[in-house]
Length: 209
Image (cartoon, rainbow, N blue to C red; front, side, top):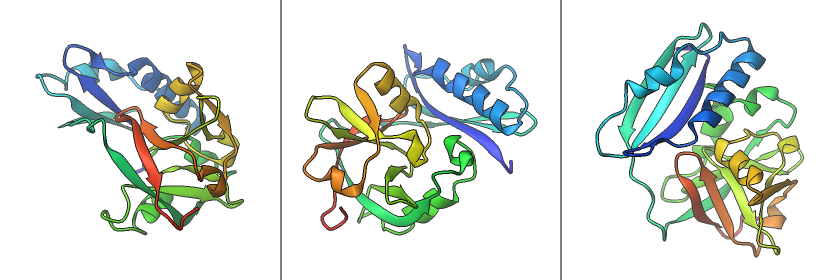
């Protein structure tokens, strides 16, 4: 598939898909916004591909014409004591580019940012926009602990994908959005997260902020 919409989600034995309704709503909204056909029988196609007693990473890819392909791979959750090393990339996102508000196969900036560091140098790479504001990681949204116990996460106005997990955190009032700059991340507990992995403790490698 060339230009396509993507949803990556987690399936748990005995529980089913995590946040399935939210993923389907985002897929439908993105289809509307980008002129794709609406997905047909997406949930049935997802259900047909999952089975067994192992957690799965499930990837749905939908073409412009609404054709859906589903692939699954075993998923092993991160141990609770995991800490990801964060770096800030030189690659910039354009805050006014609406394409990156949707999860699509056009991932050039994210791939470029990830390629700036070897895997042993960084577990995740943060992207800034043209104003130097923090946007997001290549596969996660960022969360910084605030003094009041809530998390703060970069604002949509900075130009980023409104992740499913990010939206849930805001909806449940566990997080709020603010414009963040690299210096705002100093001396705060940091986390990254997405719908597949949940929340992961993180630390910014010295010299980046």
